[in-house]
Length: 249
Length: 329
Ligand SMILES: Cc1cc2nc3c(=O)[nH]c(=O)nc-3n(C[C@H](O)[C@H](O)[C@H](O)COP(=O)(O)OP(=O)(O)OC[C@H]3O[C@@H](n4cnc5c(N)ncnc54)[C@H](O)[C@@H]3O)c2cc1C
Ligand SMILES: Nc1ncnc2c1ncn2[C@@H]1O[C@H](COP(=O)(O)O)[C@@H](O)[C@H]1O
Image 1: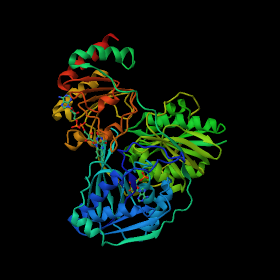
Image 2 (image 1 turned 90 degrees about the vertical axis):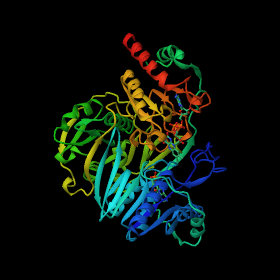
Image 3 (image 1 turned 60 degrees about the vertical axis):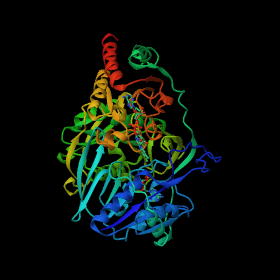
Image 4 (image 1 turned 30 degrees about the vertical axis):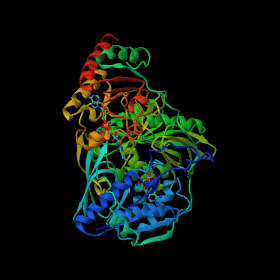
């Protein structure tokens, strides 16, 4: 089983973001970076499959030299080798990213290509399905369960108010949702081993970018919270406020 | 004059509310872009064309009805091919989807088939010169980005509930169409559909959400949350990741950074600490109520109305009071 996992370097979302002086990006000062939450789930799921069935996992990340840190993290988790598709910056345009990833993946001979459901910084949630279309491969998005065996896959997708179980042939693309696997913490041995694993750097073939960020702002703050009382005694007051102040009852 | 195509999402033979949101947004976009036509495309099992009048009522000049027995289930491959074929023949300025589970799956497929750019999960939409410009929550909803896409057709998906369906009657002339790709040849096949754990309205559509956390102590106590939702009449039930991790509720009910993003008029958080990853999914709710036994719980920092105390006592009493209030209201 040969699996590729595409991972994006994103800031830790616990941060209190500020807008950079350009007005069109967040201020990077003080931010911590890692692979996206869903990308971490994808790496873990890929490792679990190859640990059971044999094979190798390759991690791919598009961006400037700093994405090598993110790739090293994947290597330290157990990924066999990594590819950086070098670009001056990570574009906002998901289709541009998909084109560059598809060009790299096309002749890789992968049985399974895995993505996160969405990268929470740009919050597009498109790169996996677009890459699949460009490669002409079947794709299942937002999988919360995944099994592969005998050249076929089955997956569960969460829908509004329900779920569906789908079946598909390999090679295929899947995008990973909450529920599959939590990423392991790299062990010291893994971190040491990662330093010696191959990390190849190639230019990204991005092409034209049609979707761009024009500006950014912080959303309005909520008014400060208010405790209206304790225990069941507070219920009449709550009902009154819901009826007369919030007007939602 | 620029026509706009709206994808009208349906499930089990009926339109979803997000279909009307897409048609409404398409109408507004077509009108500001010089008054073109709005075409709504709907795919479903035979009979789905019967939903055309509702699409016409919300501004569709034409309804393209693609009826096929196989479309009783969502068939992404055939439906994406069909929408893309229609787009090629129609000279559309934009194609509007909902950023629902189905729309999030479909829109990027169509964009890639057409080789065009797209904007995801937008909360506003307008034409500005040769670009389509929108507001888009990013960075786990902590930043609002103004984003633009050039080229035609531009693909856009709308955050559910961000656009209110507006009636604006147009002809809604029905045109039947065939799937552009044989559904029998689709590689991804639905083997089973699983109904959610409750019969309540969907999280993204419900005006009220009652959400439970680990403070409920045991899965059976979710009954109290269900009953409170029932008392509101139109409420959905959500939960935290702690709860889905423990298998008390399905992942589709999880609200937050790695779950669903919701923005109801009223959000009632029961036994939820208010971790930053949970707040990421619900902080834009209209009114937030929190019930938690710990006065220092972070949820109280965002709660308009907080009550300190034991949820297992407060929730049943609140359920009774809400029932009373609605009976007399
Ligand atoms: C990458 C990442 C992504 C995440 N994504 C999400 C996400 O999408 N959604 C999400 O929810 N979480 C998410 N989390 C987890 C999040 O950090 C919290 O762990 C989680 O939200 C806590 O859930 P909880 O509030 O139910 O549980 P707890 O934090 O354990 O809180 C339980 C609360 O119940 C109160 N309580 C206890 N007993 C009672 C009682 N009898 N009556 C009233 N109150 C009581 C306690 O005071 C406490 O405040 C994520 C975490 C990470 C690292
Ligand atoms: N720059 C990138 N390098 C590698 N993979 C990426 C990159 N950007 C996005 N991806 C992948 O595509 C997924 C969805 O990203 P997005 O469509 O931007 O939300 C991510 O979870 C990653 O798996």
